[in-house]
Amino acid sequence: MSEARRAGELRLAADPPADATLAFIGRIRTPWGRDDCPRNPAEARARGGGAVLQIAAPYRPGLEGIAPGDALMLLYWMDGADRALIRLHPPHRDAPAGVFALRAPARPNPVALSAVRCTGIDATAGRVEVTALDCHDGTPLLDIKPQRPGVDAP
Amino acid sequence: MSEARRAGELRLAADPPADATLAFIGRIRTPWGRDDCPRNPAEARARGGGAVLQIAAPYRPGLEGIAPGDALMLLYWMDGADRALIRLHPPHRDAPAGVFALRAPARPNPVALSAVRCTGIDATAGRVEVTALDCHDGTPLLDIKPQRPGVDAP
Image (cartoon, rainbow over all chains, first blue to last red; front, side, top):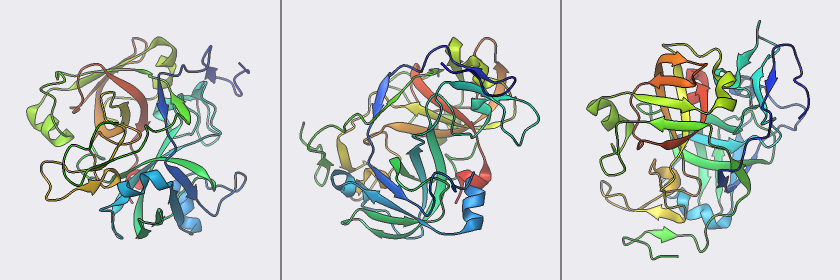
């Protein structure tokens, strides 16, 4: 394990174990590379540009019933994230905080979560157009869920 | 693969592949068994009773910064879900729909998502008390994130 990067940061003694497995159901196409990626959804929306979900063939029947205008929750895999960092000192904060109190990609299970609106869909081709996302082009997609205000707010 | 269960339902030809791995960071303690579990968060809230997140020791420093009153998004693992079902006919709907248009547990990556409010926390003991959840006692927990209205709604 490498050292923590800033004072007050803390790493796990070992990488997280493999208790379950995930399948990538497709890829997210965005205008962003790894170096110019917006740091959060607000910045992505401000910079503009939508995203496209490219769904692998076996999973395309799962899109039936999604329509333009729908609010969707996307779960995607932050494949470059540091999974052993457990306490983090983000540059914009005064003090370190636990990763579960932050939306940073670094966390034991780097599953990102972002709400978008569907702007177009071709289910047969496995193509879903959505509003802006803050991930780099090619990010693996894990799940699409209908957003429900009664479930996704306490 | 077993047959689809109702007319119009569809299964994948093979179980989803293992493209990435997840670690269970703890368990969710609820009043519900597998047989009397609420079908959704609205039903769980109506029936009452909070839940407790029991966080495994290595991950407890990740809780620092969470306080009572905080709105949290929880990601948890629906360990009994059918991962090969891709089009589903829920009893309460007129017609089948793709799993990505539904919040059903059956989906290629059965990661559930629910918003709660923190009602108490002992980070050292790895104990976080939260409002009602619709999962059975012992459900594996994957992640805790601060809920952000600007990220979690489109």
